[in-house]
Amino acid sequence: MPSKVEGWKDEVYGVEVRDRLFEFAEQGWESIPEDERDAWFERFKWWGLYHQRKGQESYFMMRIGTPMGRITPAQLRVVGEVANEYATGPAENPEFGAAYCDWTTRQSIQLHWIRLEDVPQIFEKLEDAGLSTIQACGDSWRNIVGSPLAGRDAGEHLDVWPVVQELQSEFKGNPAYSNLPRKWKVSVTGDTRGAGQGDINDLAFEPATKELDGEEVKGFNVRVGGGLARKEPRFARDIDVFCRPEDVTDVSAGLSALFRDHGDREDRFNARIKFLVDEWGTEKLREVLQEEYVDYELPAAGEDLREGYDYNAGRADARGDYVGVTEQNDGTYAVGLSVLVGRMGAADVIELADLAEAYGSELVGITQRQNLIVADIEEDGLDSFLDEPLVETYSPDPHPFMRGSIACTGTEYCSLSIVETKNRMVRYARWLKENVEVPEGVEDFHVHLSGCTASCAQPQIADISLRGMKTRKDGEPVEAFDVGLGGGLGEDPRFADWVEMRVAADEVPGYIRNLLRIYEDEREEGVVPEEQRGRDGEAVERESFRDFVEARDAEDLEGLADPEETSYEDPYMHNTKMTWYPYAEDDGMDASPAPAPADD
Image 1 (cartoon, rainbow, N blue to C red):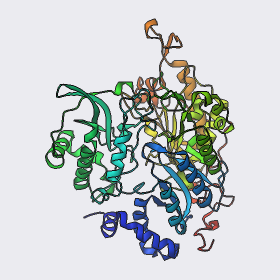
Image 2: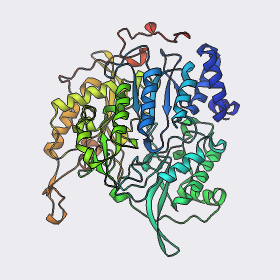
Image 3: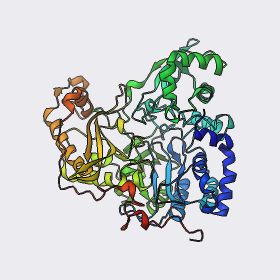
C-alpha cells in the first residue's frame, strides 16, 4: 500500500499546489482545515515552504533555490530586503537579531517566520528578481549543487554552468519528474577541488576523461545513491557510465525516471535511491537504465580526476573550501567570506550586496560550507575591498575553529531536531578560539553540529561530528551529543567513526580540547623529501587529524579523550524541543504568541 504521503500527493501535487497556496494566503491561516494541515504542509514543501515546529503555528520557513549557489548582487539585495520585511518574527535571536538569512549546506537560502498571508507578495518580489522557491523542498529535484565559481575557476576541468542551467530548465516544474518517491539531490562537479561533494548525492556527475572515436573527451563519470541521513550513510556508487556534457540531461532524465518508477513508495524511510542501489546493485541499475530509459549506447566509465579533490577532504595539505582570496581565470579575484554557522543579519546581506556592486562584482556565490564568495574583484580594488569593515567581520582569513564550524537549523525552528544548534555552535567556536591551542600546521578543522540524525549539517564528513541527543546529568535531563571523528571526502572518502555517545552539551568543548591535545602529542611526523616540498618549503610532514583517527581501531578511539566541564557555559542545556522558542525569556509552550493574528 502506498504511504500516507503518497496518497496526499496523488490528490494534488507539484505546480498546481501554488493555486491552493495562494487561496489559503488570501483567506488566512485559519482557512486550512485542521484535519488537512499535515497534508497541505507536505504539499507546500514543493514550493519551498516548511511549517515551523510546535509552538510556532502559522509560521513557515521559506527556502529559495539557487543552482550551484549563484546569485547576482541585485538578487542578494532582494533576499535581504525580503528577510527584513517579511522574516521578522515575534522573538529576537540573541546572536543574530530579529531578521536574518541562512546559507545552507546545499547552497540554498532559508528565511524564517514567514506568514502564509505574505507568500504571494514574497513570490512576486523573488520572481521579479529571477529567483524562485520551486522544488526547493519536496519529493522532486532539489537545488543542484556544484562550484559557484564554475566558468571563473582557473584550475577547473570544465565549465559546468551551462550544463546546470540546462538541467534547471529541464527538470524544475516538469510534471514528468515532479512527483518522485523522495527527494532527489544532484551534484555536477567540473572543478578539480570536488566542490560538488558528489559522494553524498543521489546522482553525481564527477569530472573524468575518456577516449571516444579517437579523441580525448572531457566529461563525467556517473555515480548514484549517496546520502547521509537516518544513521545509514552511503557514498554514491560508480555505475560504470561516462557522460559527455551534452548527454547529461538525457542521463539525468533516465535515472530520475528510473527512480520515479522503481523507488519505494510504501515506506518513506526506504524511499531514497541509495536503498534501491543496495537492493539492485550497480550492474542491474546500469542495465535497466540502458534498456529502458536511455536511447543511446552508454560508454563505460572513463578515467576519473578525483585524486586532486581537497574540498572537505580532511587532508593535512588541504584548505578545503573557498574561504580566502582566489585568482580567477580572467585575472580578477574572488573573495571567500567566512560566515559562522551560515547565518547573516538582513542588514549585513543588503550591505554586502551594495559592496559587491560597488566593486564591480557580477556574482555572489553560496558554498556548501555555508559561506559566501564575492567574485570579479579587480586587482586594483582588492586591498580596498578587503579593508571594508563588513569584509573584516566576515573574514576571508578566519581562525580555524571559526572557519570550520557548521550547524543546522536546530530546535529554534525544526520539528525534527532534538537540540539547540546555531547559537550553541557559535558559542563553541568562540570558546575554542579563545581557549584551545590549534595543533601546529592545522589551518582547516571542521566541526559539524547536527540537531538530529537527519544530518542536515553533514556531520559524518567532518573532523569532529556532533549529533544531537539527550542524556541525564546530576539526575536531570539535558541536551547532549554523540561524537564522531575523522570524516571527510576527497579521493578516499570516509565517514566519521562514532566514538562517544550522549556527551552532555556543556562537556563537548572540554572533550575537543582534550582530544586535540592528545592528537598534538601522539600524531606522527616525518620528513618531506626536498623535491616534494611546497612553496613554503615545509620540511615536516604532520599526520592529518583524519589519518590519525583512521590509524586507530574502534577500541582505541572510544575513550581516547574525556568529556570535561570547563569555563564554557551553555544556556541551552534544558529540553529546547519542548519550548516554543529556545531564546525567549519565557520559553514555555503556554507563552507562545502563535498562531499569528490575521491582522497583525
